[in-house]
Image (cartoon, rainbow, N blue to C red; front, side, top):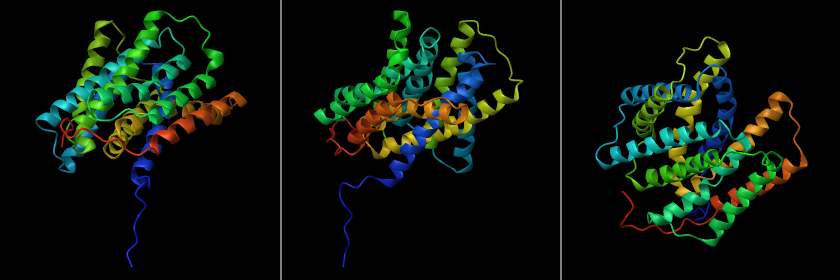
Length: 304
């Protein structure tokens, strides 16, 4: 007697990868704080992705994984420039004068932006459920950080953080739009232009370039290169290959929850009722997004 799996059952591999992406991405904020204590922002981010690219290329060669070619190679370069270069450049620059809370809220707009851009590229159709889920999730993050959003922030910093969210969204959509290739060599190629852009910016703005001497910096940097870059972004592309671009982007909404949770666990920070309420809203928004039926895609524009 044949057993049939439910058609709407969530892919367990994708769900596990999504959970790993959220955990690693949220923990990265803690590691970056340690890194920034000794390394200038663009310099630290640049050497992080340069080292991660070398590691991924080595793994690709050892496992005989084929690097992206043709249109897939172009897609990896564009994805890397946006996702690793422009996103981190705008985010780091914006956060110089803006609180991390505001940055988290603005980056939480990435799912809504991804949904709109996916529609513009012909990958997805806009549904009221998707829009509603995004709004619920953004409101949840806003509730969590409501008491920190009253600080006066320069308009340029706000625009930079918004552009970071746009780059995350567009990078996610383009990664879905170009032909599918193994996530390890794809990230290996993508991190090269991202690291090059960040290092160029570091020299352009005259940052101080040092080699870490503190043990805490080396631990943080090692984590950011391995689990925080290789693990995070390989996992991200695994999810992206199995879910829609807009559903995958909801990982960014959960990053702040993990960061605050790690602070409560490791530093004994107080978790308020407001945080619990906001976390519930965020979880509700993500649940609505990832359990929604996949929208139909335009076969004329989707890379095979």
